[in-house]
Image 1 (cartoon, helix red, strand yellow):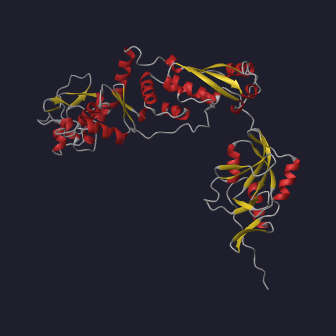
Image 2 (cartoon, helix red, strand yellow):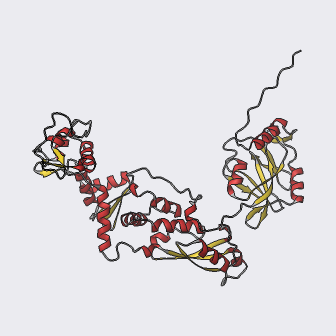
Image 3 (cartoon, rainbow, N blue to C red):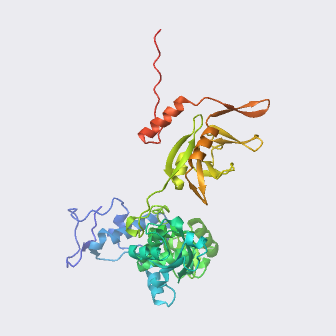
Length: 465
């Protein structure tokens, strides 16, 4: 469709005759022709929706055209609805107006300094040894690598200290809502990531972030960081004193028939259905876009890191698969390595007198993993059966560590023979069997190819008689 009522800006041309179709192509929606070429309607915009002439989508399309291609031209006459100019709410403008208003109201929009915070970082081992007065110091955020290096040295930590060697005893911050997102077990890099993301927000974005904090959208630092990436997910509606005000606003915005409408109930139900919060004269609306979870709580972008990377520590453990002999393996000390070995979430049990932990899959039986080995009490009575592969690791305080040579020998012998389970005379009994050569070959093949995918097994060729 071609526009026949607009002329280029800064031109003093008369009404343009578009019989040669030379004007800019605008839309394939035929209804836009009425907007571009009409002189107005005697009905209001809401009444035009009621009689089916236009839809909210039509109004929205024309509003977007006004901001886009039509902004290069100027109209030669105004389109009106019942004497009123065309109006379609500009939702982003609500946030800008709120931010500007809060800027001018003392104490409403928090100063950026209220979002800078300090944390009292403590050397865990020094604290446990009783040196509480000298084990910690204050560290302000955002920070930099050199400051972190000096801070670690001051409290006796190496420059590549990992998060499990320190904790945060307290936070000093001008914003109580922000403090609720922070725990004593954060990492220095995560806190710096958080502080830097806040410092990069524009005024309007800060208004959204502040309101989201007040509304309780943040349960932890991961939530808070992700909110800074999702400003378009939120919308702010200002000057709302109660649910009735909000209901009236929504009804007008959506061009609904407002006759006999209970604004208060409508406002409450709309907020409930669409994730809205009412607080301090503002409604925070959610769900305007998909919420993008940029930060997973683990992987921090390099530009926000301020600590020296820690080399992954290794530990020597014993792996016990079903139908196989135990074997020694060196793995990382982190949770992910243990989860990989057992195939999911871990459960730790301590069935031995020795300082050795048995790590297995928490859902092994529910997921019908292959039964592996039985556990026996001091009187040699079976009391449980482990399903799926399990790991035996040494214990060092609250952490896992390597098994020593004696432990490796002891438990290799203890679990040397695989077990099958059957019911005999109404009682479940474990029967020792020979290790499966095929299962062992499968494991060795997988390790050789460094992949988690099981390798296809060729069917043995039949011998010709």
